[in-house]
Length: 304
Ligand SMILES: Cc1cc2nc3c(=O)[nH]c(=O)nc-3n(C[C@H](O)[C@H](O)[C@H](O)COP(=O)(O)OP(=O)(O)OC[C@H]3O[C@@H](n4cnc5c(N)ncnc54)[C@H](O)[C@@H]3O)c2cc1C
Image 1 (cartoon, rainbow, N blue to C red):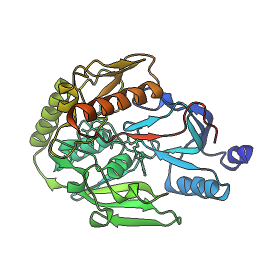
Image 2: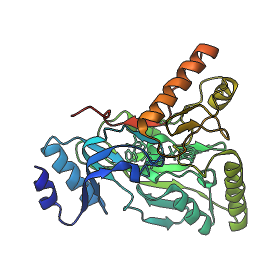
Image 3: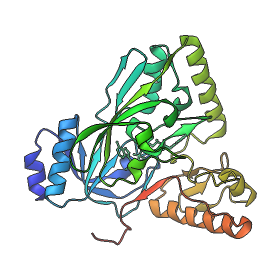
């Protein structure tokens, strides 16, 4: 089967036993058995069909900026969409393929003098990952601007799914509940506005981000969701956890919600820090911190 994967898809870049630490924003994570880089929808469909036919587990990733891949890596076929990155403008709408950087989409919108995506100027995910997560910042979220997403369903159909149908919530879309669905593209409905106004807003938000977040270190952004009635960062700060370190993973001293890789960190280090933070905050304040970051893959000694 494995050699069949390579011989079937001579036109698609496919790496065997590919170190995912080279792709994740934390610089951690074990290998993918197979890592494929499709360049268009047809190739995604072909890969999914092959995986399903051969009972090969399929995992889709974007910029891996909200991801911890366990050190045992990911069994089966990992499809990374970053080669699908076209962005087009049509009247007041911007359509981006799933692998396009969300930051690139904000820049294209700005150039087209279209307002609405400014909040996302510094979110380092892909457009597909942003829809999947309903990414948001500074009072805006994908839900506010998405007209529809183009999705490959588990049954192999390509359909447009409206904003309402995606049932967005805080860091949630129902793609998370629909096993096997892949976001292929997103269309944002924006409003005309002066270029300088949009650019100023994006620059301001990026400056605020740079002053508060440890962007100079590898990380996966805010590790925990905001618990109702609290701020995760404040709870972690108040628990005295900033600077807590396991191996190469450390609770940032600049932003308590971030865990940075200070060098040589592993996914296991990250998971140890996460568990310690959760246990400490629960013991001190009775609040359970749920992870926002997605944790996937197998433990170091697990074989699937
Ligand atoms: C420094 C930093 C700052 C950040 N700031 C913010 C912020 O302000 N706001 C915010 O919301 N997030 C923030 N994040 C987190 C992250 O950038 C977002 O969650 C982003 O939307 C994730 O996109 P991604 O492409 O990196 O997804 P990945 O990390 O690649 O994947 C995340 C999940 O989405 C799934 N997925 C990805 N693409 C697809 C697809 N096309 N179809 C189906 N499923 C898919 C994956 O399987 C995985 O479960 C930050 C991260 C960092 C490192």
